[in-house]
Length: 223
Image 1 (cartoon, helix red, strand yellow):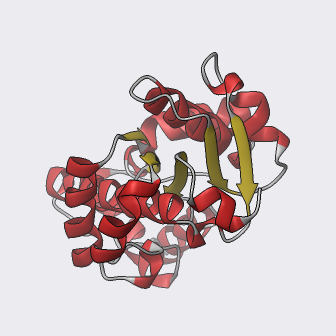
Image 2: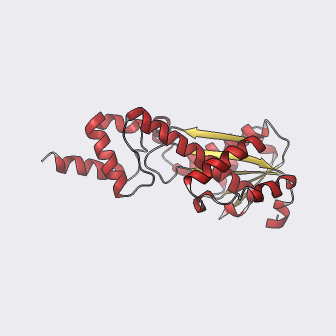
């Protein structure tokens, strides 16, 4: 199907948030859209969530949840780390979450097409689709956020990620920066000094290279 053919048909869009963030969960959202929703989504200024502020993404996500069938699969850090040890492949873990989100939306709508932002081997998501998911046409596209449904899913996923990150910050009383840069390493080292290294698995994705950097920082400071 061409881009224009996809946008004039009902479909489910899916996207994720938190994949590149050391702290916080991995979140996948699925949103069902119809051609009749298009004008309302344009009025809301739905677009790739990476092109808007956190505040705007959260505001639009609230509108979207009230307007469209939306489902979110959020894998918190502790569960994420347990699953990663078993699966040892981030794309397979992502594929399961996309398939689960699609399956959940299909319980609320009779849409027969799903569009995902492509990552890795397309076969990952195809093989992960569940009972209802195996009955639909799955379209995987790079730069999938150009589709309104995928862009809407990116906004809903990001809003859930931000909400979850805030809850972790409130629970532990420390800030958890987004991303995986040097400020994240410093924040993680400070968290470990306060709570203990063994607690890092409760707030962060341990397979990231940041874990080694945090260990190096702690060793250096203990000398």
